[in-house]
Image 1 (cartoon, one colour):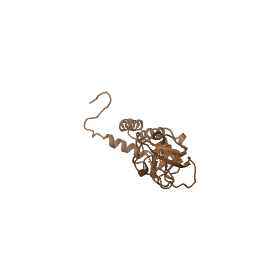
Image 2 (tube, helix red, strand yellow):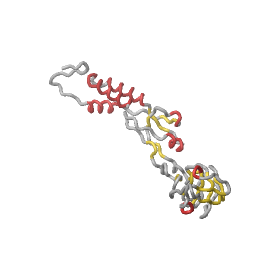
Image 3 (cartoon, rainbow, N blue to C red):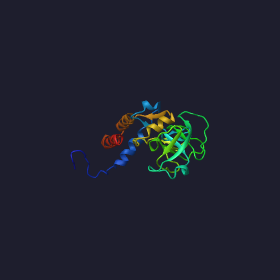
Image 4 (cartoon, helix red, strand yellow):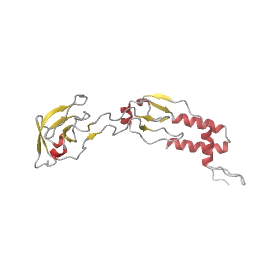
Length: 222
């Protein structure tokens, strides 16, 4: 019997694709991992998990340029009836000073800046008049709005990119998160895996190896 691609001898038991694949993968030996910076790792697959050395972010911070407030102080704010609060301080990104937000006040804050103690939410600057000494707030906000909490992206020691099983490509990972972790990626080239599969196929029965090698290559391209 022939379909132009496959030749089967009558009476000879068929070997499943899964068995072919198991034979090839059993003959492949892992390559020595290579340590690369994130910028050099494009197109490669992980040989080991990448974990966060510390919580990401490492401190509570603002997700927006705006004003740190207490929620009750702006509960009645609307476009027609804005709430006006005094601006008692300003916190820029990178400022490590200790600030505390008192009820009935606001603190101007930049994206990424450490939250003042007592902050319950951040009102985006677009919802205000942008005032320096006093600010008119034109909308209420919920507790926790525009705030990034410690460990919100990744807990300390949590896997932020997982190792890939031999012959499989994982989904796209959050490159920004990896970059923030300042991790070295331990990688293995998928092309080298395909070469290893080809070498292993030469050691097997050629008729069994052909379909298997094609299957491995399809997996690598997936």
